[in-house]
Length: 164
Image (cartoon, rainbow, N blue to C red; front, side, top):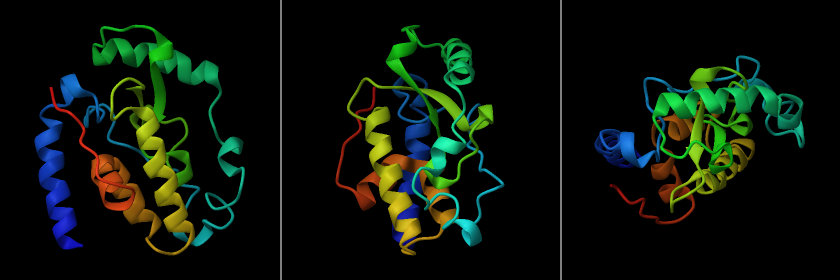
């Protein structure tokens, strides 16, 4: 497992230098991720592992669309159409991410091989592993925030995310 973390760290460092144009990851300074203080390892059976729980904390679209519009400009995206992006929680709600903190939200493009829909797959996989006791909540949060593609490769399947 240490080798996986080391390789992911190297991959993450190399790819973060490319992030301005690839957008596979958010800008680590604008969107480092934030956790929900109401979700802990001790209460996951009453929170993230409870069916329907995320719908009780999901922010309204009016909030996320306003933030998405602002962040699309901040990120310098050429495509200004809101429909081209998911206002994504870097640490997803199903992994105990903060629902409203702008440092946990970013406009992740749907387009591309490694877009928002692909990230959703690994988020669900990690949540299932947390709820089954296979990994801790902290570990899942760290993995998704630092290198979600590495987590996807480790727990879902091999994928190549193209660099510019």
